[in-house]
Image (cartoon, rainbow, N blue to C red; front, side, top):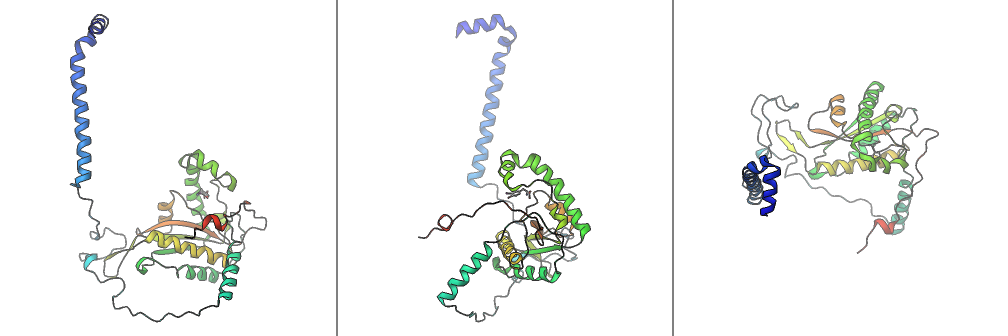
Length: 304
Ligand code: IYR
């Protein structure tokens, strides 16, 4: 130790002169860091900083949907979305025989098993009424506290479709190039997909599934939507089956990072967020899909 010190003093006199000072500074820095870390842990465990209050009110004019001059009423004192007096009515659907159940469940499985995600579309037009029925069907989906927290934006206008394509392709370029990472991009190779989204202009309709986190009642109250994400995801599942049932195809796309710009373009309010973007139409005559198979029942079902 002594010989080390003599070596430093001889070879690095400046270092030797300042070594006590440097050591003292290091000790202070390490102590301060330790105290700070301890404070963070204490704050977390004692909860001395309360979590931010879940605000249920907006300041006047803060929300784009709000045109109220008066103070907004508090959600907790507002009448519930559905009255507690809501009448419960009889529900007695026809009871099927076991044979009928068996044949219908098998036929339905076989029909739905034909569904495939398609990325090549025909430009042939589809009657709007078919799309309306498909959306009606999606709207029969269950939702948390029957909030029905969804909007299905149907785009038929080719100018808007082109604008959507531009927004999505621009983001997808960066997604594939940087955001998704090499592993994700290589895992998608078998799908033959990239940033190019021709189907956004080819398909006769685009349906943008919006999830609503809350809605603003006529009384100015903000009503939170319970389980709005899973509710809207279930409705999207209904939408997919309805599209298939109508003899049409789609591909479930998630326009990563393009949600805000799409919402603005479509003039949707701030309580809605883009969840999915579905092109809907007939498949192109020469459309191809990857030759993948589905997991067998034994792999997806556990019976206890
Ligand atoms: N959203 C991109 C990337 C993509 C991601 C998954 I996971 C897919 O199954 C397919 C595509 C796109 O639409 O290309």
